[in-house]
Image 1 (tube, helix red, strand yellow):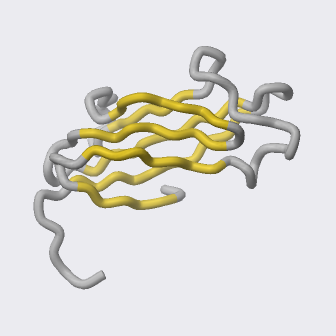
Image 2 (cartoon, rainbow, N blue to C red):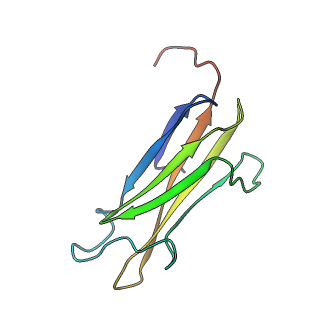
Amino acid sequence: MADAIKYKRPSEDFDYTFSFADKLAASENVDTVANGSDVTAVTSDGTVNTAIIGTKTPSAQTLKVHLTAGTNLEDYLVTFHAKATTSGDEYEKVLELRVRTEITGGF
């Protein structure tokens, strides 16, 4: 189950940030990508997709990624994997990213 759902158009690109303050001890930060924190994406059929994932930036207790492109009518599960700097504890949050050229209906 996703922790958040976001709609985007294929031509849009923007940053998305998850906070891990609810998971990490106050003295912990999200570690670097080189040391184990990461953001990955898979399509609705389970295929790994690297095209929509841009720069990954851990900062304090957050993990940010630049999201770009995407295929119309595809739903991506974007997993934010945060590794704590000191304890090495690892946590994940999932963004369901729904790419639509047209968004219709009432919200």
